[in-house]
Image (cartoon, rainbow, N blue to C red; front, side, top):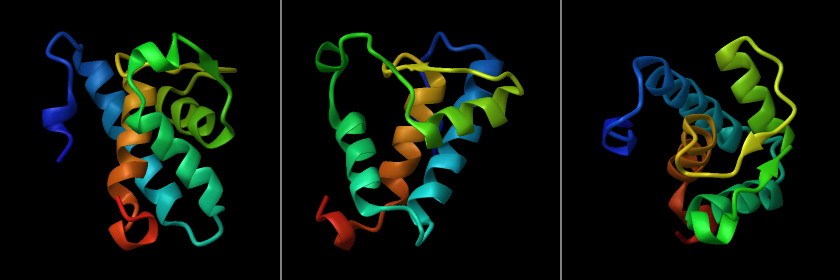
Length: 105
């Protein structure tokens, strides 16, 4: 799991960031305390293409926490782009970590 989602030109550190954020996203989506509307919001981001996202910077707390944890650097926002390993890892993890019957994906 994961490898097919890497961009070919990512560095090892970007791939590691993707993996950590992927795990964080999956764990977050799986947490019973996570509001379902928050999960749906992230799934919508996961399904959106980069034209729709329009290079927005997002400050969605669980994503920020995942990237901060993975990098050891405090970040305020994360680029909403599937080129960004933190964003892509987290949203892929959420999407894959969400049970299909919950959202009918």
